[in-house]
Length: 184
Image (cartoon, rainbow, N blue to C red; front, side, top):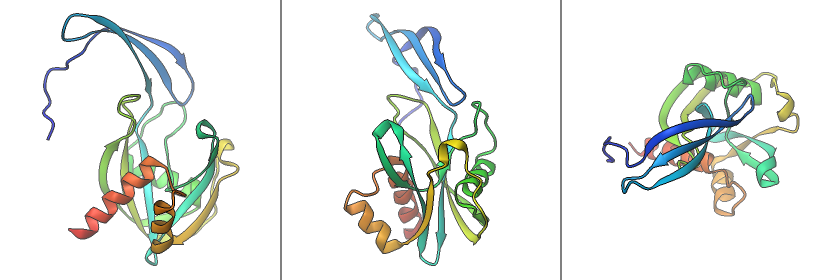
């Protein structure tokens, strides 16, 4: 286990160079262990919730266009609130599940907290297993108007991972957490 020790890099100053309702880009002047100085740029975003909606030994996944990679992506429902707002992780998970799929969950089990792109952002995410699902209508945001929601069997999910159809790192990490939790 990594220890919490003194940081190897000291922050000398920090400047927000760009901000939107969903993220901030920072440039920090830093000093390294050897005394040399440099600039570290990174993205600030609130932690997000990722939900694994499981039903009938399969999963509800969403598919949407992801602008930065220029393609559609199949993944577990996930997201944050606008305006860099934060709420309790389970509350966020319930909001995102309902908005993206129309599903509500009787049981929401926390599987763990992970970080994505640790060299680029401090953003992490909480993974929840949602079971006891009730179906309703999604409440999509403007950016999600092309979002599709579909149930897949566990076998289909495994095949999509192995064939490179599912490539979202957060989805793959969350699925690994689920499989490890199932072995305990």
